[in-house]
Image 1: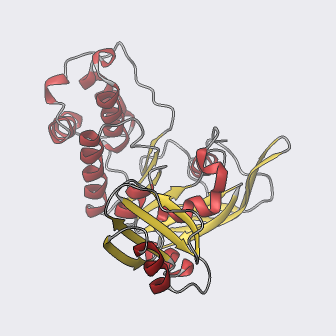
Image 2: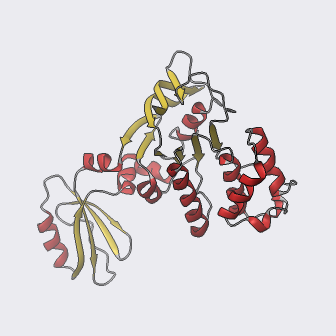
Image 3: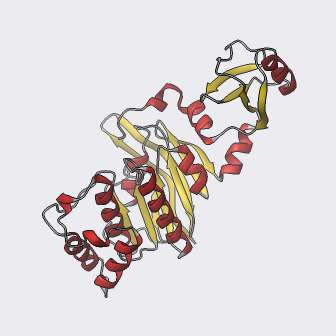
Length: 305
């Protein structure tokens, strides 16, 4: 069974078409990543899945866990919205107990203690939410989202604003949820996170689906037309190298996108005339490069619909 099925769904706000004839399926037990520039329709799609927004009349159907009649409060779905919100004057344990009872958790304190220890927050159980750092509060809201062990977890930008340590903790928690049988859908702007974590990646651009599949399937569709190399010294490579469409300079590492029909060995020879090459490989484009190719200047982003 698929955890989510969307068939030919659209959503407009006035004259703006936020989502345009979208169809996709999220396999049960997978980690499924939503990517796309802000304003592309990611959050709108997630909110339609949660029935916060209704699709345009007659535009198609959305099935969640096999049902078309689900509601956002179902105990089988956990949702972490992009806009974070906790009751700041409540103590951490009390706010988590409140959410647990809303979801019908039978032994909330047992689950709360386990999650607080798992995320390194046990000593904050009796502190008020307003005393927490942003990262701590984000982890508390994550606990509130998954406290009922939902079959489907939907996370809108869960890693935004987290330092590397907290991001790693949350990443491990997400993968543990998958290991326990849950389906996890999350949106992200971090392409490296999507590459490392997701079984499937979906990209929406200007309201329409432009990518959908495994990372291997997506990268294979773009071919092995990327050279990654490291040269001695920091001098930049010229932009007019023969056979090269674009150079992404990451400092010590450079990615060269080859023009169609270009000879990688000829490109390597041209680079070696300018600097000694310490590392060289012909590779498929990274998800980051694919994202930028599709989104272009919009990869710099404006607010999501």
